[in-house]
Amino acid sequence: MTKERKMNIREDMSWRDMPQGGHIIDAGNAEDFKTGDWRSMRPVWLQDKCKQCLLCWPVCPDMAIPVEEGKRKDFDFDHCKGCGICVEVCPFKAIDFVEEE
Image (cartoon, rainbow, N blue to C red; front, side):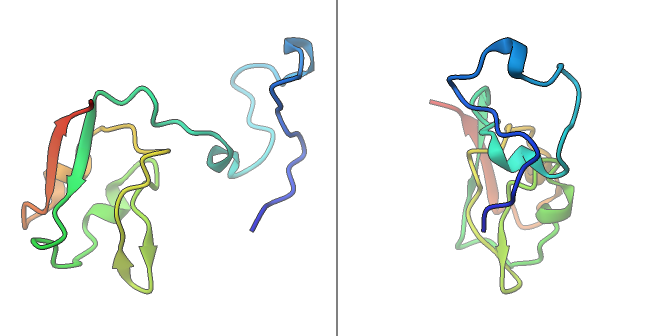
């Protein structure tokens, strides 16, 4: 489902046409941008150890842990910044934390 945006930023746009930095022109526009590119550490979901407690999901500041039908899925690496909070809260050690390649 694509949301209609008030402003769509395109590669062919001049800097003069873009909104001033720090301004949020649409709610929820973070899904339009891949923000996980600068990650230096990467969480690795160990599915066989996961008990689906979902403690990792509410602490993720980037909403990079998708949940479908009450069960978590693998990380959304387009948006995960590798902060490691999910690793710290997992009581079952079902998330490893490794250097980004």
